[in-house]
Image (cartoon, rainbow, N blue to C red; front, side, top):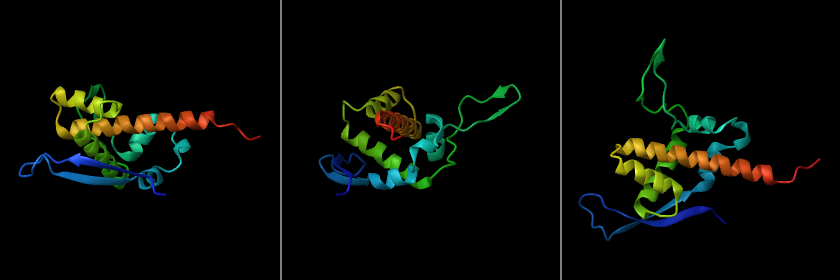
Length: 143
C-alpha cells in the first residue's frame, strides 16, 4: 500500500472558481527517501540545512546581516515536496496542525509568501526530526 497524502485543496487563484477543488497526492516515500537515515543528522538544524530551507549567513567581522535569503544548498526535490505540503496545508486550513497555525500566524504578521512558506517547511522538518528521533529512542535496543 502506498503512503500518500491525498486531500482536496480549494483553489482561490485569480480566474478560478473558489468552489473548484484540486486533489493533491504527495508521495511521502519520495520525501522520506530523499531525507534518508535521520540518525545521520546530528541536530535539527542539520536536516533543515540538508533541505536548503535554513537562513543563509552574511557576516564579516562584527557585521552580521539580520535578514538573509534561504541558503538553497540542499536537495531541490525535497524543497519542492516540502513546498507542495505547505501549499496543501494553506489550502486545507487544518486548525489542529501546528505547522499550519505557525504559517497562518506569520501571514497575519504580514510576512511575504516565500518567508512564511520557508518558515513552515523549516518547522515541519524540525517536528519530523523530533518525532523520528523520539520514536527511535523508544525502540528496544537489541544487545
